[in-house]
Image (cartoon, rainbow, N blue to C red; front, side, top):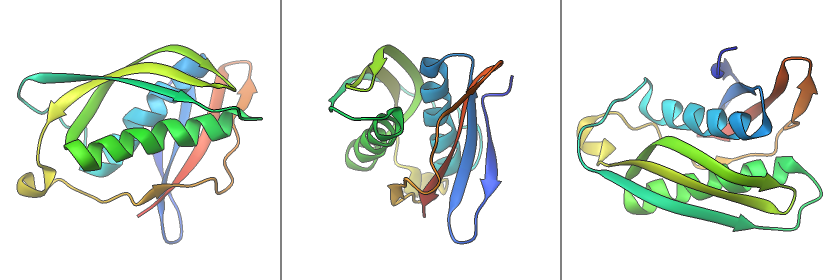
Length: 142
């Protein structure tokens, strides 16, 4: 099963993400978002930075947790210039997510690799389950 693919959208950009588990789906969605930012599978050099990310929200659905997860990663990326490329989710449910994300501190503006994502949207977002696992389509405002 492929982790994600880029999809075309009228004014924005999106991905279709897959995972055999919900955890894998959330990790692949994060990888896909960072591929959109750099436009390729970017292998930055430098010392690795780890961040512990905990989002506690009482949600009725996992879609809200997914948007919060990706939005937090995007916020940290924009604030601290950390290109995340490794994700490990330890807890995931409707109440939130606990995870560690690691990556490299890099200024993508200087390297000419940056495509700005303004926001993660709820547009047609639905996590679906089938015999192969889980999937969802995520649209990003660019």
